[in-house]
Amino acid sequence: MKGRPLAWSLFALVVLAASLAPLPEAGGRPGSTDRLVRLLGPVSGLAANVQWVRADLAFRGGRIELFHSRARTALTLAPDSAEGWKFLARQQAYALGSPEREPDGERRLSWVRAGLTTALEGERRAARPAELAWLAGFILTKCATVDPELPWPGGPAGLWEEAAGHFERAAGLEPDPELADTARKLALSARRAAQAAR
View 1 (cartoon, one colour):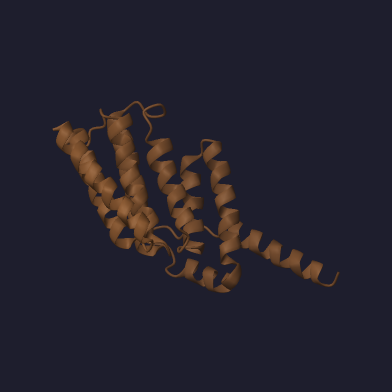
View 2 (tube, helix red, strand yellow):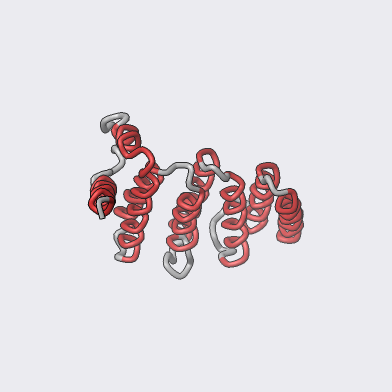
């Protein structure tokens, strides 16, 4: 019973820290999030999970700016989490950049590019970078097949060609030899699709 109050206190601290942990704005106080991560130490991952729940609630409520703010805070708290980077990139490219949600091609393109930028940033920071390279390839593959009117430079052929580059990079980053081989095969298939789309 003695451990319960301590556990509840720790949980309350994590929830409080997560709810008070906005990312510093451009020109804001440098290092304030670094201090927060150092303060939370081993529970920063738990605080990030709380932020992800809050980010998802904001997304479901249509509060996209708040969603992004909370997602970025979660990524600051746990930058090595490939799952976090993938979630944000998928929401940007697949949900916000979908033809069903966004009829304007230029706006869809900006969301797809935002998802790719997030995936590439995650690739540099996450513990499992190959997963983010795979995702970047899949984002472009989906666009080439589902949204051929997307105003991507080079059209569908350009999408397939760039997807192939992401799959090749995934092959180089992938520690599992079988998955690396699969990534190389996907790259080859994407290059063939690019040729066919020309």
